[in-house]
Amino acid sequence: MKEFKYGNTTVIIHSPLVLMSAEERKEWFQKEWEKGNPVLKQIAQAVIDCYRKE
Image 1 (cartoon, rainbow, N blue to C red):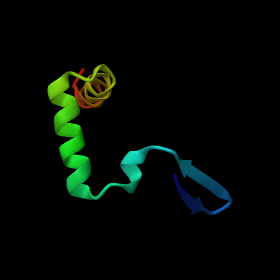
Image 2 (cartoon, rainbow, N blue to C red):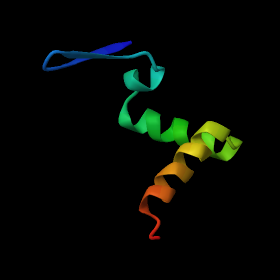
Image 3 (tube, one colour):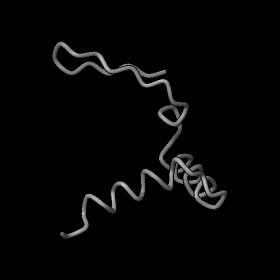
């Protein structure tokens, strides 16, 4: 768990990813992508959709 404060707002992140180094996160994402993690694929598609021209 990691806690951030922005003005009067407190953001608490419970993901273990927040405690990993940049390299560890990169490896985790690569492994999950190769395994076909459906949530990761949906997030990637949502980002692509945001940049798609209409």
